[in-house]
Length: 297
Length: 291
Image 1 (tube, each protein chain N blue to C red):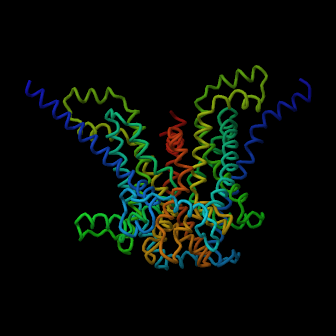
Image 2 (cartoon, rainbow over the protein chains, first blue to last red):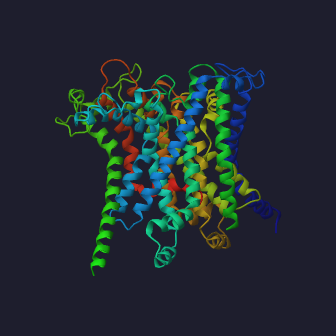
Image 3 (cartoon, rainbow over the protein chains, first blue to last red):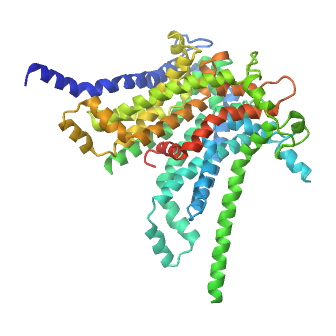
């Protein structure tokens, strides 16, 4: 083998790594280095622009002493819990119903899933109008004769967060449905047949056999919906703009307004780090287990 | 006999119940879209007269015209048109870039595996689940330093960068199931790295290219966070402009224009969904790495 062909074959061996290197570099910089950078800013006294004087955990102390942040965290818990429970429950129910040899399955599935194609800003705009107490659903029901009916959640600070739940569930439950349906289609029919021959009723079969078999799908749904919940930002902004007052503030909107509206970049960075840690605590074990089981099986 | 009859009657009732539930839920899901469409077609007086869910008495496209070319975003009363163009200028290069790069990455990570390839994939994968708040400030600074702040090319760069994570996931998971014999045979025939990619791999990957393009298009078109953080005024994408129109606080609120504007922002992704919904679902469920 001549020197030049050896050279070129060695180059060919390196070629894949050379080609993948730029993307890797981009991701290392824009994901990992930027995370680190945000972390650094969170331990400085940055306000309008980043300054690089170390102040320890002062910004974190300040963050946790901010009532608005407490509201945001409490809202995240309320919102995530309801959003997850309702989207998962509704998604599972729709998937099970759709799995009963339904005639217009394709069309129904398309209807359940179309909100996923919309921007959260569009969703928020539409639901803001629907839940408008003066002209929206409340008015319609009042006109039908139920004059005492009230659906003014959006203007009431105590209930406004539930409007975000409603719109969020509308947008995302179809997504849960799609994953559950894929899971249901993967279940061997003979298991169900066997149970039916044993005389088990359909609800019992679902409770005892099928739903437990959907565990991997359930895990995916819960993890992915949690991620959607934590990063929810546009929906709140379009629907309530964090209000009334700060009633629907979430960590994502808090981070944005602290950083870009209130010149508290250090606090904003600290809140971003808190968000990242929450997401990482959910996602990293999930990805790890998914990748490992993929390699094993 | 009687028992058999009541059995089949019960089953019929069961079917009826299943269909009933499905249709009621479907109507609930369609309701917001219906409300948006009819509201956008009504004159404002009819809306303030208390018509919400009903069919418009008078159908007018005035609200659509206003949303498209007259409504005020900030101090500029240009309608959504220029912002729609901004979004197009942003989404087309960003989709092309991220899909192209993702395809070649997926090809390398499956057919040219090197030590550490799995680790590289893991690094990229976490990028799919990054809460973008964690990178907003550094990205804003970097765009400023590069002279890309507040510009469409800046947004293209941002979307393409983070899009690589998703597109690599799509293509990698697709190529993993392509038999290695395909590339091995081509190699024996003397085809090189790019040659195999171009004439062996790409022709088999039309479905996943469609999935990737649709997913990226929907994500980038619908993005709001990057748009609102990195642009201002006339360089904003359509989602930001829509939010501005809706949040105008002066004067009598023009709900019909708001709804027409929301429809204009929604139509591109809705059309893609209607035309290629099957592929959209595949992209969606790809996030559940194994489904």
